[in-house]
Length: 280
Picture 1 (spheres, rainbow, N blue to C red):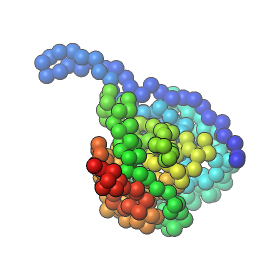
Picture 2 (tube, one colour; picture 1 turned 135 degrees about the horizontal axis):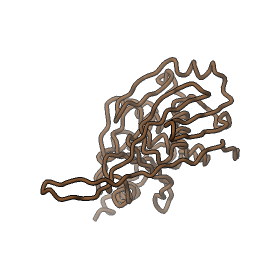
Picture 3 (cartoon, rainbow, N blue to C red; picture 1 turned 90 degrees about the horizontal axis):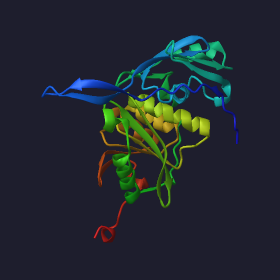
Picture 4 (cartoon, helix red, strand yellow; picture 1 turned 90 degrees about the vertical axis):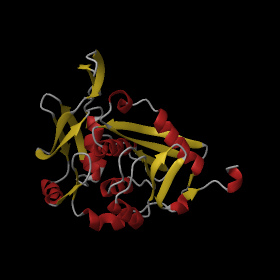
């Protein structure tokens, strides 16, 4: 196993800030609100994109963004990622030729979502390369445990609102095990940060479950597929394009996940439902 890790700064910001507000009765209250900062990514001195982020995991966010946009395909090509909040920027040094970066950024598709997500390159032509495992299964009790864990998880959303969360669990035989839980101002950032952490920690997606509080758009399905994760859950809904792509790459997606309720939109063959005798 390759143990290579690029040189990373450690510039996480506080996730919330305390402010003073006045309620409907004129009473003064101290509350927390999420932080939000622009972070402009420079790839070998070429400006790529400006992301709005909480700043809780800027290095992982940058790494995952580059991975999911296919701007860098091998982590060993990245020399360093250095975040500088004085300039609201992150400098990425790579071994990738400038020509290949220019070619990747030439064609850009803007996707729907909180803010604007982007997918560089002709990503539709690359879907056939996404191969998700057929021989993995997720039991109904484990689905309910994931939903319950998220419901009870301490979060910025509960304290301050205005953020999305993404989480990844190991699909263990004795129950799901949390690997990462990330919140950010947009679900795109949260999933990119998780993808970056998986890349750093050399974790493959075959035995993982991905949960997001945001809707399952085409971009979310594609990113989940790129991470090799066969199970994608949300408490929200699914777009038509997201469902179409899930069918194409044979991903199991579930939405409206709340309590013991969930809807399987695609990939029910991977779900181990309770038998009638188990529900009585």
